[in-house]
Image (cartoon, rainbow, N blue to C red):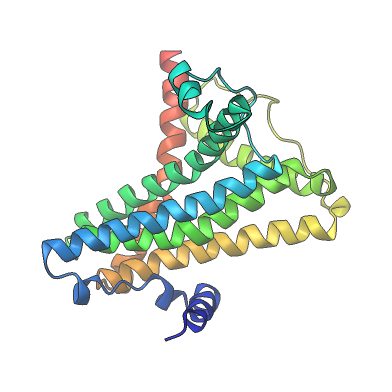
Length: 263
């Protein structure tokens, strides 16, 4: 069988048949512990491969948040020095790539924990691998795509209005919880001002639309993963999806309380 048709089918599934894209067949091909271990290694391999595909192009293009790179440990220089002509440049690039990949890894790990906690809480879990399959496939495509577009928006001068609008939305979202907790806490730059969207370029509009679309795909794929891979009812799948979506809310609440109480 040719590899190309399989790739084409997967690409179609990502955008037009997300139910097939997130569907796990672990129940049918991973009955023994050995088979499950093989599936686990395969899923981790897929995730690591997608992390590399996500972080390397971003790092090469200069899209990053790293302001300064620490000096490399001497053992590392001793290893890569004889291999590369510019070991410091290799260290800096690798460090920046790891930081870039770390954001997607952290978001994916949080989504996985909250997703599986949801299915376990409802006592509908069909296994850890089903949850891992769901999160790896959804985060590797939809979440990585959203992160890439958001970081592009933060560095491209041509879509400055779209970037400002995205930052404005994030600040308003955080300030909602600051006001809710009635804490004396302010974000850098203060409260957001209204953004003149009439100055947004077509590329900026496309960026905002793409982020919304990928966000909806991610949420819907989580719902499908819960419903199909864990054999859930619609209401249970919706609850599990909401459980995942609560993770940024919990993080914001915790950050506000920690910052205003401990610091």
